[in-house]
Image (cartoon, rainbow over all chains, first blue to last red):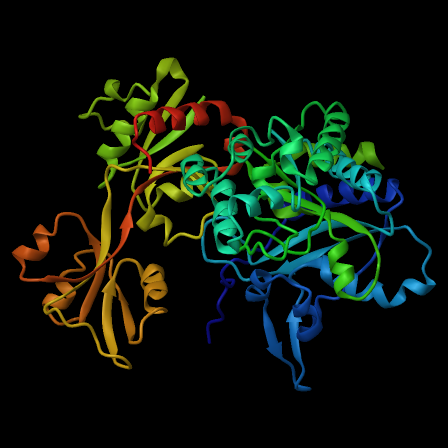
Length: 336
Length: 208
């Protein structure tokens, strides 16, 4: 009998040099996380489907790999570290000293359409700061994300920053109380379609967000205006640390990431548990997405625990594909 | 430099008109050339000519910064692309095509030939009848004509092919427009240029 040597769709094996390159990059990133007092946690790749599913966004649930094991339990393969970590930490908080700085690494498995560059199994390194609220914690985590990204030596690194709910008041007021109208408007802002934003009743401030990422007058955002001003300050303070990393605020990028329950979103790229600062990183000449994160206190709320949380993940497959071959090893030497 | 992918197919003309208005020197393109890419505007714009179905992947992977593709194709690819403008010119529509005016009755199961299986499934989700989808790569109209399928789900521009082959547009569905698509990271890098292009298209009333 001939045994197939192929692999399933969206799965890849790293052999020889390719494995070494990714391992060097991983070791360098882990070295920096340890150097910043983050402790490693090792999380299982199998979990019960029921509690795990409840913490995922509807879109993520659709990507979950589930199966029934021989004991009759419905299990799921890990598709997202953050909800899994939150579920394990929440019941143990009583005995823990806060804040916690944790990191993890490993595979996540999500169904993705068969398409060039789409992986169903991918490798991540992530970090979470638990138990510290406020913008200082967000700035710490964003700074760590920038440090790690810059350390990889990837060409054309860029980070886009925003915050969940930034446009809620603008969207609801333009939607004239129609939640579907507001959701349509959010989608038009997210795809940067100015004419549709105008047609759907979007204000001048929303058009400014489409054009420039932020409105000329932060007060146009209502209650979120002050938050925007502080977000811009945070980004300005971090922008000088790594001049090679382009960093900017673009609220349109996260227009569908709302905190108002009346504003639905159908964008599968949005993770619904974010409720504060959010950011996304790109790298390489092709501008591939290499990770992102943000504040997700809402996730612990769902678990009945009041625990501020902010974190990020970096995708090692994407980073390795754009990192200079020699850079990972050399930077590992400098970091250890 | 911004790299612009233009379609070779049905919407090529609408795309060329639009980018001419936007200020890209498309009039300098040699219609006879077999070159796969050409630099225009003093090298500030590089134009690639791609097949319609390949174009979204080139933009999604960042090989091209932006491009023009029909919403029919966009509906079939699960790409994470920005769509800052939809063009008025070059529009057509989806239709259900058959040999008679009759649609399947509620509860019936039909055979539906199409090049657009995902869009067809979304359309069927709102119907009282179901269908087995037969995915074809071309000449979809032949399927109902030769009884491979009961209906075809395809784009219709003028309807001439249908008329000449004794077929009927049983139901006219969504309008399809050429769309400007942009890679997310490229949008951040070329925001000023892209906004200027879209503003010119809006001023010329070329966008929806």
